[in-house]
Each structure stands twice: as structure tokens, then as C-alpha cells.
Amino acid sequence: MQNVLQIVYLIPLLPLIGFLVNGLGRKHLSKSMISVIGCGTILASFVLSIWVFLQVKGGNTHVADYFNFISVGALKIPFALQIDQLSSLFLLIITGVGFLIHVYSTSYMQEEKTEHFGRYFAYLNLFIFSMLLLVMGANFVIMFIGWEGVGLCSYLLIGYWFKKQDYNKAANKAFIMNRIGDLAFLIAIFWLIAKVGSVSYTEVFSAANLAKLKATDITIITLLLFIGATGKSAQIPLYTWLPDAMAGPTPVSALIHAATMVTAGIYMIARSNLLYSMSHITMDIITYVGLATALLAATIALKQNDIKKVLAYSTVSQLGFMFLALGCGAYTAAVFHVMTHAFFKALMFLGSGSVIHAMGGEQDIRNMGGLSKKLKITFITFLIGCIAIAGIPPFSGFFSKDAILLSAFEKSPVLYGIALFTALLTAFYMFRLLFITFTGKFRGTQEQEHHLHESPVSMTVPLIILAVLSIIGGFVGIPEVFMHGGDKLGEFLSPVIASHDGHKVSHSTEYMLMGLSTGLVIIMIIFAWIKFKNYQRSEATGFGKVLENKWYVDELYESIIVNPLNKLGSFFSSIFEKSVLDDMVNGVGKMVNYGSRQMRLLQSGQVGNYVLLMVVSMVIIFVIQFFLRK
Image 1 (cartoon, rainbow, N blue to C red):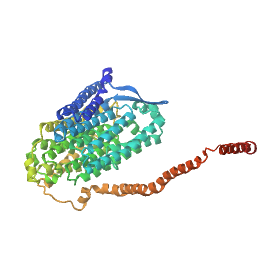
Image 2: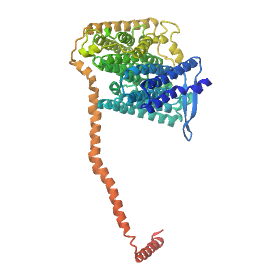
Image 3: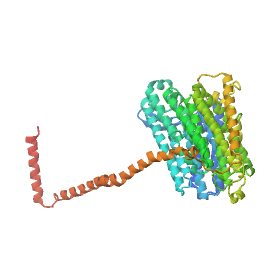
Image 4: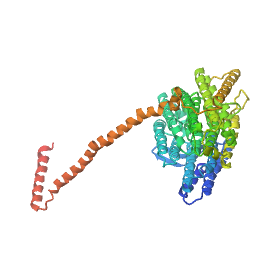
């Protein structure tokens, strides 16, 4: 493993070099050179990640300790990278899907000026670097550096078209809401330092150090880390930034929503599974928050008309499923769904980009229709993505979602029922999106219809690769009920993630649950086909209006949080600052000015005055020395 130790730092370093070269040379490099550098560095990282994965699969894991990053008294925090089963799997997802998104971007962003084209790829490379640092870090501080890095890059990429004020507001919203979670994460790190004296995973999760923590400490630390995860992974109440992140270019949406930033919270909890398994309170909270988020986002997605907004709320809902699995103790199922979700959600976001590209920037699905005739590759790959996310066997989403539903059933049939209902809503709104967009008659303008064309090869090839992965990706986690020893993923992750020790249901029950969910999903797809195959534009009414307006959650936040804070800020700015702070500062200046004028009188230049002051001073000292001093 020594060879891996020597080169493993290249995996995050190469994207960082790509960021520096493209960022500093954006005014001097050609678009083709920027593309080669941007894509090439990620491809090289992907190749190295494959090699590292094979090493880990062979049983080689290692913590590469490079230098002391922070050293204060007894506290030593090294700059170290940890290569094990969990990090190596995430490396493949991040660099693999990230590379496909980079390739796709070379065509999608071709109309940008060269300087902005270079800026875009520099941001993408920095994003990948930050995410790699997050998952490779051997302690919570290195993870936090990557954590903040992806937050910064999301701000830069969401607000990429910075001349549009609404996009800047969306970027600010993402940045500010993430800071709430980040503060909780930071407090958790300080709490660990205070109680354990270390932030390194190998030390924090050792039996000796876990024994030092009281039940209260574990609950508080895990809850604080979970609050951090709700920010990055968009759970209630910190989820509203993610749909607004659609302001960025479509490949950015795929990168943020599929393989990288939003999965950071899942990774952090899976990495800390030993700690979480010791707090039933936190696990229950994660379960209910995840399920509520999945259901809420699914209902909102039912009535969204922006093609990217539907996918955004779908992402929030799928993240809720992942947190449901985490709360039920099925950490492997959550990680499995992270992987399959990366495939089919990246596929659908890039597919939506292909549609938007063909429609000349149009994103409202009510103005589309009949696109399957002109965008055959996009349609077929998008259909595969919809089948995968709906959970039809043997597509990837079936296996990972079945594992999550099974974990919910083992914990409570009620949880299973709500989760299954949410899964049915997922199938309905995804096929609603597919049928409205690709079937029926075209509802756009004649100019848009004339402009319709399939995307270039550099955009369709990533779609095809992701479609293939969406079909076969689930076979790494075939349940035991189908094949003894089929769950290769669970076996691979077992050294890092404790196996799910819930009550095992019988094979017959498991078959019944699979059949029930698959049958109901097929019924929902048929229902969506009947309802939307000949879609005619209509406006939402009644409860549909509430869903279209996202349960008015943004308006609620605006009225109870944003507006009061703005008014408080205006009060401090116009009254408190001017009448109190300014007067205090000006008063200090006036006092100094007045005092200096009075002191100046002592320096009159007359020797007689100086002699008089000297005599008076001697008398005062004499009186104090002999009469007042005890």
C-alpha cells in the first residue's frame, strides 16, 4: 500500500491544478485547451480512483498522514487522507460522474465567451477538488475544509450568470442556508475536541474514546452533525435552497444534485455510523425528518412545470429516502441509493439540459410535447432514468429503493406505508414529466419547433453511459432473497459500516413487499400515461395551486424569518447605529479633543508655572505619604 500512499494525494491535487491553470489562464487559453485541461484532470483522477478502489478491494486500506495541520498543546490535527472502502467508493462516484458532466459541459457551455468558459471549468474543477477532500479526509477538520469548499463552489456556480439578479439571490440563499448547518457542524467538532481530544476517525471511533462519551454527549454531537447534514443534503427545514439552485447552468445542477454536494450529509453520517448507532433519539429524528422531507418534496414535484424544478424536488425527496435508511440503521442501503441516484439523476439532469438546449432555453414543460420524434437518444435515455428512479426491476433504483423500503418495514409498517406512498408519487411525477415533455403534440412556438434537434455527440455519449449504469448499477447490491452472496456492496463496505441488524423478514414477506411496490408503481405509470399522453395546457386550481406554490414554505420563511430580520437590520441601521453607536463614537472623539485642549494649557512655556506645578505636586505627594497612606 506504500505506492498508494505516495500518489493518493494526486486524486484531489489534479483537479486543483486544473482549477489554477484554467482560472489564471482563462484569458489566454483557447476553449479546446480549457476543455482538455478541465476534463483531463478529472479523467486522470478517475483512473487513479479506479486503481485505489482495486487496491482497497484487495484488502489494502491506509491513512496517509502528510504533516501536522494544527498543533495546539496536546491537540494534534494532521493533514491526512483516509483510503478505505467507503471513501474509495465515493471517489469512483465523484470522479466518474463528474468526468461525464465535464465532457457534457464542453458542448453545453460552448456559446459562452472564452474567458467565462474558462471561469466555468475552473469552478467545476474546484468543486470536484473540494468534494474529493471532503470524502478523503481522515478527520472531521479536513472533511470540514472540503465541506466549506463545496459550499463556496455551489455559490460561485449557482450565481455563474452573475448579471442576473435573481441568480445572485439564489446563490446567496444557498450560501446562507448552508452556513446554518455548517455552524452546527463546527460546534460538533469543538465538542468532540473537548470530550475526546481528537477529531481523527480512527481515534474518535475507537472503543476507548467512545466509552469516554456520555449518552448526552453522543446525542448532542450526533444532532449537531445531523443539522450540518440537513443544510448540505437539503432536509427539512433547510431544503428550500436546493430548488433555487436551478439558477445555475444545467450541468451544474447535475453535479450538485447527483454525485457531489447533496450527498455530503449522507457520507458524513455513514462515516460516523458507530457514533449514530449509539443514539436512538438521533436515529429516530433522522428517520422522521427524512421521511417527512421525502413526502413533502414529492407532493411539491407533482405540480411543478419547470423541467429542472421537478428534478430538483425529486432530488430532495430521494435524499429524504436516504436519510430514512440512515435513521433505520441501514447505512449500506443509504450509500447504495447514493450510488444509483448519482447515475439516474445525473442522467435526467443532463437529459433535461439536452431538452433545454433543443428548445432554445425553454424550461416550461407545458410548452413542450412530442419531443421523442426529434430527440430520440435523449428520450430513450430519459425514459431509462425514469424507470430506474420509479423502481422497476431490474433497473438500479429498484434494488436500492427496495433495500430502503425493507429497512423501513423492519422498523415500522407505518413508516413503510408512508415511504411506499412516497415512492408511488415519485413514479407518478417522473412519468408525468416524461409524458408531458416527450409525447403528444408539440405545444411550443414554430421557431422552437424549427430549432428542435438532437444534441451533439459530446452531450449524448454521457447520457448513454449514464443510462447503461442506471440499468446495471443495481446488480452490486442484489438482495439475499434473489442470490446468496449477491450483496457485494454490503460485503465490501462491512469493514467501515456496521451491518444492519434489524429483524430479518422472511423471504416470502420480502417477495410480497417487492411485488406490491412494483405492481403499484406500474399502476401509477399507467395512470400517468392515461392522464398525460394527450396533455393540454391548464392552470392549477384548489389544492393543486398550493402544491404548485410549494406549500408556500418560501413565503412562510419570508414572513417569519427574512422580513423580521430585515426590519431589525433597518432598525439597527437607521436608529440604533445613528443615534447610539455614532453618538458614542463621536462622543469619544469629542472627549479626546476637549481633553487635549485642556491638557495643552499645562504646556504654557512659562517657567514660573512649571515651578509652581512642581511644588504643588511635592506637597500632594507629601500629604498622601504621611497622612493618607496606611
